[in-house]
Image: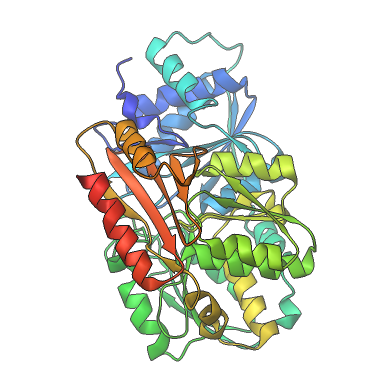
Length: 447
């Protein structure tokens, strides 16, 4: 069948409903998924999007028509879905477009936890199967059953921390009308914390703000609310709950670099000498704190498919990406929004310090630009070569995009997997140099 090839992305399938991704396409993807994996059973969950039920019905019909049984887990967060896939040891499809705007939908697909289908491994195969459309007739038609893993999920995530160590902290949590609200409340009712919830009800019309807390407008209200409530910390979750963000007691947004460094070094107190994985964009703070805590920092490409695979191979304790993905060995090497929220509560309780106090040494030493996106007309590869020539006296690495390092500053530039953008992350040892080098590199990228 004719299908827009651009919906088959590096880590998942995503497109606008119903123009790029509709019931017909979803049905064919369901058949292709079973065919490619030779699956006998498939777990299927969905987020709160308006198009979710229609896409769920279509993809499950395709799965069953191709001879596999469906285990429906209903409306869940993505970490609940990963838990179900790990628990049963079978493939899964999560109907979600994560933090994309409400008109999008898509699929995150598990081969077998922690291994996902990605552009390199499986997603382009699905595209070819969908386009060819000649599926074998199965010997039987699949059936659908329903399963609820909520109680087991709650038990699992609470087992990762020492609940008895928690102090009666006040927390403000914004789930942005995504899928996390119900499971967050189910977990937190077992904790001695005061939870002030914002937009906890799943609502695909998104009446309050968008689903991506990396966008400042989507977290502005939470940032004001934390100090106004005199809360210890604020938590924000993206639409499907696999990404997590924190606001400190001052109402300041905490970068993913600093959270990775702080959580990684804290976890090393529990698992001395472990490996910690970080992505190519990260601050020097990550490497410095991990090494100071006796751990081994390992650099990896951006993207959950790559990070999970590397974690499993290295038996790593923890991994963090600057965009808010945090992965835990104790959670099947998968990313979760709930687990890091619990870990930070435990850490604050045990250390007896404010979040701002823990951040201050990092803020005084590491000056990061945050991710800066530039739309470019020409070839992204050519632009990266121009940067390589301009900074040819630097230490240059090409693990993911191009990383250029000098003794007092460094940066990574990589192309977006989905848009004609180059993404810059830069850091320097002084604020002045960070601003100067940031402007210099952006000038080359946009020149």
